[in-house]
Amino acid sequence: MKQHFCWKCRTVMPFLEENEWEQVSPLLEGAKKAIQEYREENNCSLQTAREFCKPEAMLKFEELTGKPNVHFEIICHHRLKNWGQECPECGHLLRTPKAKYCAKCGWIIS
Ligand SMILES: [Zn+2]
Ligand SMILES: [Zn+2]
View 1 (cartoon, protein in one colour):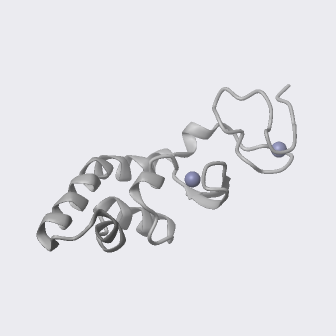
View 2 (cartoon, rainbow, N blue to C red; view 1 turned 45 degrees about the vertical axis):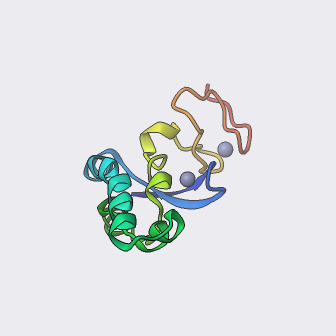
């Protein structure tokens, strides 16, 4: 796990390294289903279910990163591999593995 500024969340968030992603990603598929089942069992709105239901993927993410209540749809984009390397100048992720420069400080890969 590494902490980085997330370009989508607009704040510093934990990102999963591959060995961690492998533990979380199989659970993500079941997360939607867990929310659906929670709704049916409790006869509540999607909003309520999203607030109270904690699918396994979210618990696993919390266990790995120490950050609770990160929604599984957010977890989906917190795979470190998808964000390219770390900028040696400012420490931000380059945003994509194909990026040629840092969107934060303008550092260019030579
Ligand atoms: Zn994010
Ligand atoms: Zn930079």
